[in-house]
Image (cartoon, rainbow, N blue to C red):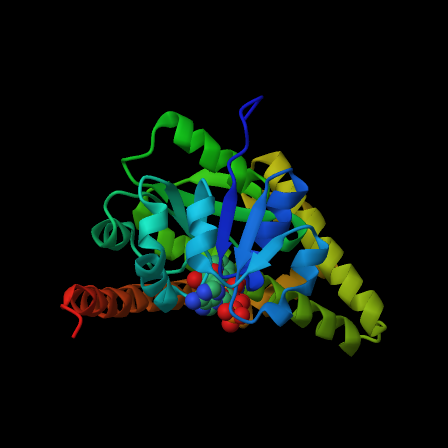
Length: 283
Ligand SMILES: NC(=O)c1ccc[n+]([C@@H]2O[C@H](COP(=O)([O-])OP(=O)(O)OC[C@H]3O[C@@H](n4cnc5c(N)ncnc54)[C@H](OP(=O)(O)O)[C@@H]3O)[C@@H](O)[C@H]2O)c1
C-alpha cells in the first residue's frame, strides 16, 4: 500500500479465524478492534494489542473496513445489526457458502467482498481467495489485497470457484492433518518413536509443498523423481493405489463442495425470512 494510510479494521466474531486474522493485521501495523460476546475468552487477543469489545455496532461504526468472521448462519443477522455503520464501506465476509449476491441484496450500498481463508493464517501461511463485488474501485481492491496478504498467499477468483475452494483449501488443513497423522501411524507401525514420526511426516509435507510451488511442474513429475524402479517408494505407492487413495480425495472434495451448495441454499432461505421479518412494522 506504499505510504497510504492503513484503514481502521473491525473484525466481527473473533473466534478461530477472526482471531488469526486480527493477529496477522496487528503484526503489520493495522489498528484492529475485534468483537465477540464472551469477552473472557479474548485474553490472547488483548495481549497481542487488539482491542476487544462486545459492541458490534460501535466497532463497525468506528472502522473503515469491516470483516465478518462469525459462522455462516450468523452473518446476515449481524449485517442487519450493524447496517447503519457499514454503509458505503468495504466489508469482507469470510463465511463458507454465503453468496455475494445475497450480501448485496441484504445491503446493496456496501462494497462487498466474499473471502475464504484457512487456519494456516495462524502462522501467516494461509491460502486466501476472494471475489469482490463490482462496486469496488481499483484502490479498494488494492486495499483488500494488502489486508489479505498479511495472512499469506492471496488470489482473486471467480465466485463459481468459491464453494470448491472452500472444500479444497478452506477445509484443506483437516485433510492434510489426516494425511500427516496417517503417515505418523505408518511410522509407528515400523517402530519409529511418535514425536520423530510426526516431525518427519509434517516436515516432509512442508518440504514437498515448497518444492512443488517453486518448481512449477506437475506433482507426478516430482513423484517420479522419488519412485525408482524396483525401489522402496514404488512399493508404498502400489499400496496407496490399491487403497484408492486418489479416488478417496476426489470424492472428499466433491462431497464437501456439494455440502457447500446445500448450505448456501439453506442460508439463502433463512436470510430471506430474516429480511422479511426485519421489514415488518414493530408492534
Ligand atoms: N475454521 C476454519 O477452518 C475456517 C476456515 C475458513 C473460513 N471459516 C469461516 O470463518 C467463520 C468463522 O469460523 P470459525 O471456525 O472461526 O468459528 P468460531 O471459532 O466459532 O468463531 C466465530 C466467533 O464469532 C463469535 N460470535 C458469534 N456471534 C457473535 C455476535 N453476534 N457478535 C460478535 N461475535 C459473535 C463467537 O464468539 P462468542 O460466542 O464469544 O460471541 C465465535 O468466537 C465461518 O463463517 C467459517 O465458514 C472457517
